[in-house]
Length: 114
Image 1 (cartoon, rainbow, N blue to C red):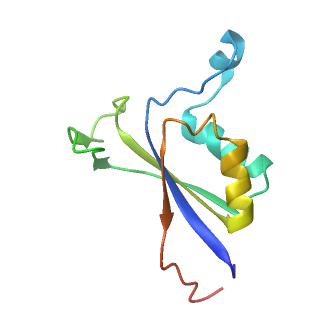
Image 2: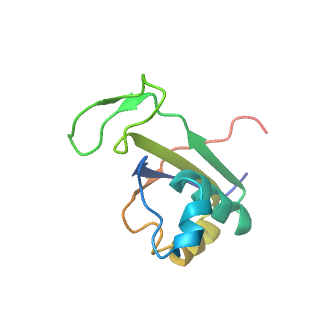
């Protein structure tokens, strides 16, 4: 995975997927699932959905993932890895979908073993 970069996309569990028809909204999965499907369709090297057990955004209230159902504000993270060019193309292509997310480039990632 030489010359690859990793980004993390932070969003709330209840993040809405914009511009879907009524019927598509009924059959659509959650935001993380849809984002990972789009990354796979774009043929990115790797996409991971982290299971966040507890945390908070923007100095807000702490959300504890202790119940069977998640609060719609519960933090979620999807991590994408590929070349910088492909990641940037994906971000540009999914600009509208990612509008209300926070995207962070993960620095100092060094592959120790393949």
